[in-house]
Image (cartoon, rainbow, N blue to C red):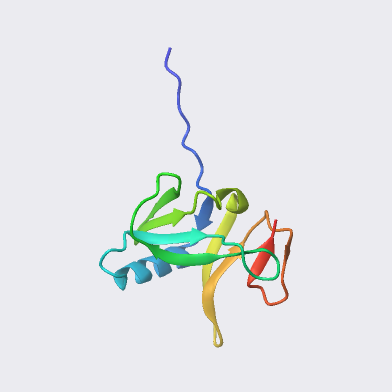
Length: 117
């Protein structure tokens, strides 16, 4: 008897605009960068913030998502705060940046820089 294994869903969904931004970042990345990593360090008035940085070495505890433009990593310690989230890239006349729709966030600060779970 063989048991079928199902594919584990990704911790976070990247929109096509976010994937394009990851590709753009990787096209200009430092030579030692192997991908882009999302983490949720403790900071801001609500407790946690979103941080996107280049990563130079794979951590086996991180979630790795392959995108058309390169590898996208989710910090292993942040996955529980991000499960089911969508990451988008939004540009308008005044701002440009990643925007997160996080169903786990119970609140956010007034400036939108941090959130609480």
